[in-house]
Length: 297
View 1 (cartoon, rainbow, N blue to C red):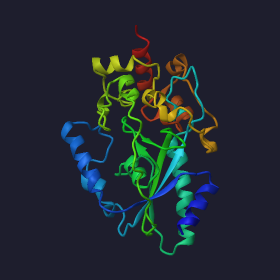
View 2: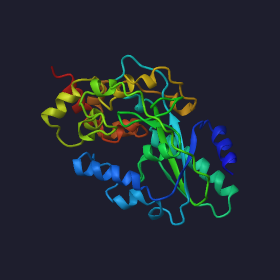
View 3: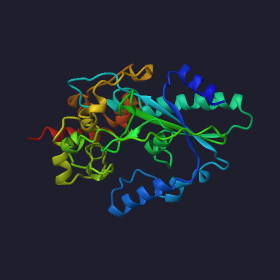
View 4: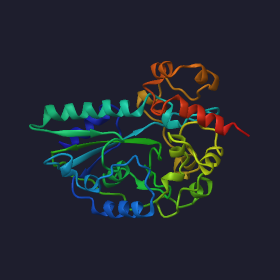
């Protein structure tokens, strides 16, 4: 069945698929507790540690995770003011649609198959799951790195009740050149394969509440009004990455938002035009605020 799964994934242009066991993740539990102790938590994560560690709490009878990588790199735009991850339609929509295709395929081929699909929304650490599924290795910047696509990919998973054979994690790390550490606008990369997300420029660009003076100084260091690509752009593992073959990440791309257009739109007009874009989830006021801070010299 695993071979059929991989073949089906390839038929819908998913090249990187692996299996992680749905067992208690006690090694992750120790890492996550350490992050909490240091206060390095963004607030976007699941707050119940047990749910992050025990898959059985999310799906009774869980046996495995099907984990897929969704590469999004389509090239570099020189005048972009959006992160590469936001060029296309919202990845949550694209990835969820693909995962549902996999789920429905397996439902029709495995009696009693049950699953839950996650795209950056479940209680689990997506990068940890992909690591356990053998799909990549960790970089100093805490990104997962794949030999073919570098770190330019999204991660989706299907927690399910079928005992697919688990893959083995890769026993290696990044080159540890520290280019990401040295170039990070917020100096949030700690050099020990963990980060302080509260100083991550991408996180700051998405904060709803008022920014501190330190936040503003970090934001001013780069021109993107949404997200940040610095630690990925300077990473040698991303130097010659393959472009995505997933069509949805190459179509209807938006690299830049015009400030005057944003100012003139009502909130309703903004959402009508951009409701299927990842950068729209915080609303236009956050994007305008970021633009004003970045361009206030």
